Image 1 (cartoon, rainbow, N blue to C red):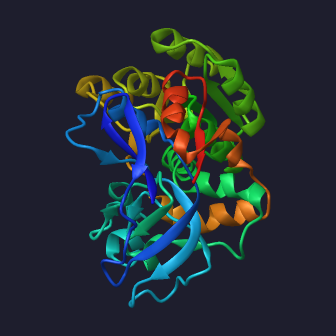
Image 2: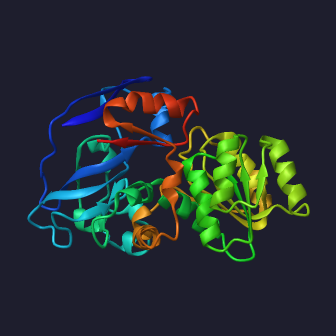
Image 3: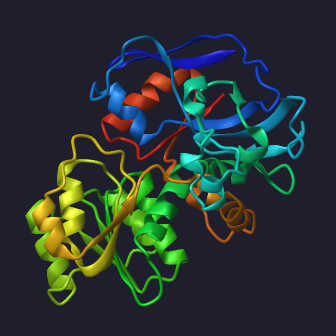
Length: 340
């Protein structure tokens, strides 16, 4: 099969890779209908994460089951399925508490490389969720979004306790941040402030439910949020970047007693202990337990109540994956969809 491999920072190649095979009886093999480039893929692409050997890329996926192992009982060939970037059994105590991304048997699906034609998914019964039927072509991008960026934005909103009567701030205008806006809107937030400097992203944030746009960053951004909230700060803040600046901006934009939901993959983030102690701000986040939300998200997409696929503003054939990385790295695209 053809698949994308990162050889070094800035060096993505699409090449022949071995077709995936059933290794464990709990595996499934999927023919991918669509895959994509994630903002977190840009960390190694930019050299912020080490690239020590050629690495298959991609962890977001949706497609049709081709084959299942002998112990798979709830997923069958021919079904269209969506899964998370972490495989989980969905039965252990941690999964049952809603934290499938910390399942005691979790496996990273990304190690298998989802930017490809086929993908092996471990723990298929616990990881994959089937759609009611084969979806129409126009629903595929939204279903793909559910496998990570929508589920991650949704978790950020839930962790921040976004809901009725709340003012919500979203720090970050990438795909996760934009879909956190959508999630906060769906959860009934009264006011949603998107922090963004880029007009196309501002427009999409507004389509997804943002009521205000703040272009300032850092201390100026915090001051603007305070101005908009009677000096108090927001009830709920979603951090969707993963840098020191974005985390401090999120914490400092939150009122005492408020909640920060952080879902940006943290890079060199250090929390100021004394400031945090006196802030009375709740922090909760981490790798999103996407599997917890998949059934609800698929239902919303299937009923056409939400259209998260709008975050894909560039579609390319898999063979042009390297161009997709460049477009996102240079901020010419919010999120790139790849068609195998």
